[in-house]
Length: 237
Image 1 (cartoon, rainbow, N blue to C red):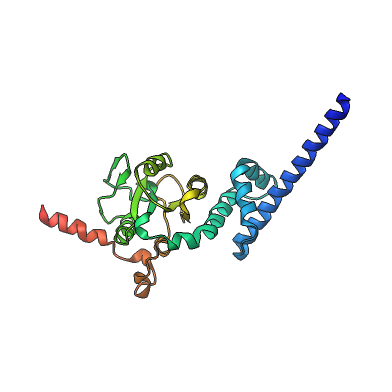
Image 2 (cartoon, rainbow, N blue to C red):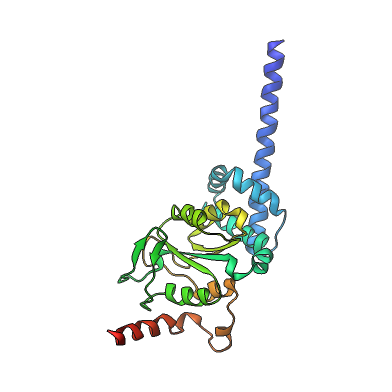
């Protein structure tokens, strides 16, 4: 009797393991289709696999010869697709933009408080360009040194949607945690812990800023509006 029970139990575990393996394989396949052809297939299955089996998926991707970062890339793109329409429908006053402090210039003099980096509009990096335009549109902007600051942001602010800028892994995990806030994400074009880069045009496109496109082909070369503020402050001294 006991042998039969253990045999059935073992067979059940094997079937479950095979079933989960198939789910993980399908998630990777459908994810790669999205990345290559921009076609979203079975998004709920992909999100389920990413949320529940994040670490095993990375191990599976690595064992199959893929870069494990692909899993995070898939997560970001799937969440972007799923939440894009809802994000655009929400008023800007109910949205926040979260930027990584690693975008700042090496000579940045901004101070750090409980909300993150307090940008003083020195005009030396992309943060000032993005921040000034986003705030003029109604967004609340936060420049944070790590994902731990997100807890304070959620606790102390009311919002319905969030746009984040980060590297693959940080962005995917943050969007996972903020799933209830219709998250959108923009990946850094150069990652690292210091002096990173982002395509400013992509960020402004995500927040719905269109005006600069009419007169500037390369938004990264636009003069930072914060520079004018800096000049005014210097004149007042």
